[in-house]
Image 1 (spheres, rainbow, N blue to C red):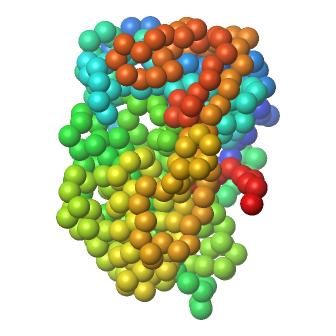
Image 2 (tube, helix red, strand yellow):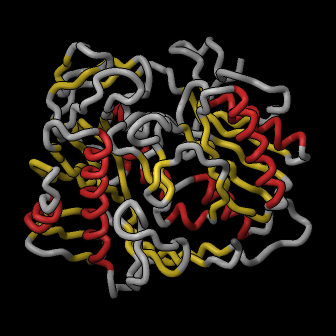
Length: 438
């Protein structure tokens, strides 16, 4: 695992503009809108497509958000980012990758789905680029190209996902292609070959909530939805090259986007500590969570701890995605690791209710004695009226149940949790949070 070297070449984007060709120059990205439309409409599952631009601070509300992706490309042509999701399955995590830093492609889509209720129902989120909503979402600080899709009516869930994902990735790749042959502003090498004697080996255990009975389980590994698999060891560089992608029909605040996987903050922090010689980064373990039986939850916890032990981990940083009873596996994994002598630290968001007085975590074990909170999912949020709405929906549902009333997307909104804000829940501690102690 340690012989993989990734050179990440950074091309910062500060301005976007539409023109009649593609060019990156000194922080400005010019895009051929007509060519991008033609590229997306090659997929007959897409009925219409539009593009718009949103800058931090603009009084703009983006609706129908399904996913967010950062433009990246492998310039040498030997492989590509997002293997298996688009294109063939090829190994990634090595060689050179170009990234357009500071910007994102936000995939929005009008899609109602064939499933009308339950956990498989389609969901979309929103992003405010200004005001309280901007403070609640990490994506409000980016320069955003908004991809506005209308998916063909009657398309089943997995087909709709595939169409949205193909569109966002192809657009992102075409934008990143503008950097081919150019010199980057900076290059960062991600390399685990150098090991520091006498410091602990740390593994990142990443729990992933999945729904194996649904058309898309929620998280994919090289384009294959994770279902009943046991724990899988990955090189952290694979995450940076798009080996993990998500279900693009379910934009929910506590589900990380593709952009989040590409920019996993705990991976970057562990790498930084590895470079400084404070620890040896031993790799990433992807753990499927949300099994249906307690027996299965015990098995995956045991399996994950055994895999961490085989990686000679002295300690583990444990985190997760999702909500609900999938947290049981997280706690059982902590217990299993601690019993094998692998010390653990849990990184998680809290519940706590709108007033912060409810139980912050759903399940506990005594071994979970080192926990880092990344903030609350449940706090109320009041959003002012928007100056402009970008996206497929001018009316939205604040609640997701069938028959829920529609609300003017441009008006002021009151949310009783952060679920509807893309990037509204800080799963992995990217943000800096303050709290009052009493």
